[in-house]
Image 1 (tube, rainbow, N blue to C red):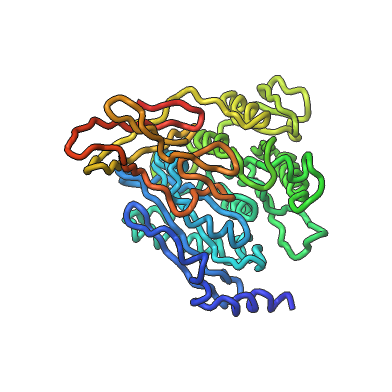
Image 2: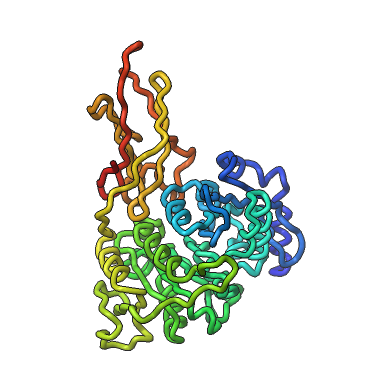
Length: 440
């Protein structure tokens, strides 16, 4: 029966069914966005779910240096949320800084189907991912997309997937962030059907961060997600015990939702990309520097330089340097990671009658919370009027459960309903980041 299970699932997924809601509502794409989609396969070992990959290419980049991958979690809702991942302004800011593409998969998994059939990359999703990179490279005019390194972020089952890809392809992986989910590296008696991974010496050199919510088994010991912390703890112990560069950042506010994790994940990945991407495209990744590392005791909130740590280093949280360690200490205390730099100013403001439109790039540290609209020097509105985010700081694009923009995508537009016909006005638009700092 177990052998036939994947084939049975495929039989439920005709092409017509695969495009029924919610998977037929992906935002439309045109350059700098590109998308490919693959139907489910009935071949043993290949991906049994349809999947679409959407990529964003930063302007002005002749040769991409890497790709930032934002991988959603299990279940129909999380899979659907992956359709907006490549449109996230905050994650785009990270990718653009390093000359990287931003890619978001969306697996078309029915709610009750076995998510292991995609979140274990050995079940065909790893091969489909690399096939998608090659095809997106051709579509975008960036064939190097097929071979550049990956910076991987994953939530829940997506954390399992990015971990599996890291352990299978450490030479391609710059760094990996595990929001809640991790791969198995030892026998799990509760789920013997889940295949385990081997930790190679090469994988030990990839910086990793485990990021469970405190209500996933740390402070709340029962419920649906109580097993997340034991799995993270076991994965951390296995990797760190071998000398791997891995940390733990427990979110002190959440359960399985992503909360404010991006305000540490993005700076952490930024640091790793700066340290590891080669100067020349095609060269091997550089080793992660370790001479400035800080260490902390698991489930404590204070880190110190490695030379000052008095415990067992192979049981300690690994952090790459003092600046990241200080951000980590704020995050694991209350998630309020400080930021003293204002966001970039909006650009390309256009006024046609009473209609305003503009563009903007996100603040790398703190994203965009909202925009302020001024007319003749007086504030008349904010866009959106009431920012929403049920999972963390209020943010311009809103956030879904798997840390992707709310759908439908919000636009940078405003209608001045109080403008008088025939009268000239002077408008300004100001970006405000999520710690309240205003742009020029």
